Amino acid sequence: MIEKIKEYYELTKPGIVYGNALAVIAGFLLASRGHVNLLLFGATLVGVSFVIASACVFNNYIDRDIDKKMSRTKKRALASGLISGNAALVYATVLGVFGFSLLALYTNALTVWLALFATAMYVIVYGIAKRRSPFGTVVGSVSGAMPPVIGYVAVMNSLDLGALLLFIILTLWQMPHFYAIAMYRHEEYAAAGIPVLPVKRGMRAAKRQIIAYIVSFIIAATLLNIFHYTGITYGVVMLALGGTWLAKGLKGLHHNDDVVWARGMFFFSLIVLTVFCVLLSVDVLLP
Image (cartoon, rainbow, N blue to C red; front, side, top):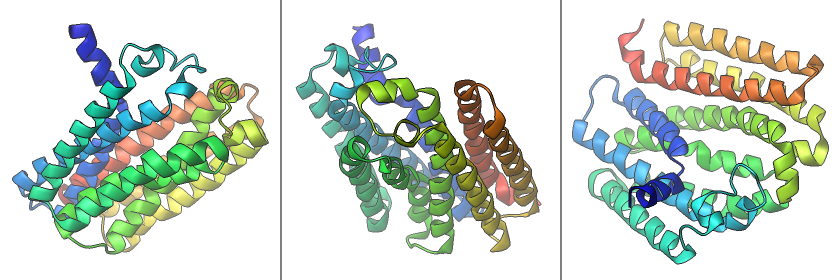
């Protein structure tokens, strides 16, 4: 029984859920500016987390044929047959209904629509695009950039410059993050027939894209400071962190082991996201 519960839990891709929950918190607290409505905060965080979990289960259902071909995913419950497709669909639906119900009851219509948009982009549009084009990653970055925007809009009930900047920053962050994964797992993606950039155009092209996106990320992240959404501490730390990320990216142009370098870039991108979200969350307490 415990093992079965664990399989259902893993089906939600908890790492993705927790990472996006951190982004939701960052967007919510940035918009709250120190005046936090705890009921709204709890409903937004839990509601969005359940919606993301639902989308991940639907994604697992759609990708079960691909997962069977990749060493890191072939033991997933759907790919291995431990959980049936019908059971997964029911599970995903229940999670989604609960999550959207919380958002509908306690937030606002715009938040609900944004969550619906993000879910459709991830489950349907990205689910199709990643099988057909190396630009599927760009499509996936749209849905991945929505959690902080949703957290922000739950408070503001409007789309303003702050929401737009959060969306742009998270979109730009995801591209080097995704390309790093695709580089150090390129053999698995190739075996599964997924046309990610390193598979279709080579490692060198992926490295150039990573560098370009990191530069764009640094510029976009700085705009939050320029437009007075954040304080000087945020600006200094993000410039230093972004500069370090860029330096690591440039070293990749001459690195002998692309897989080792890409794995390092992947883990550093997680540090960048974590620090970014923490800085936004506590910005009201900082200079």
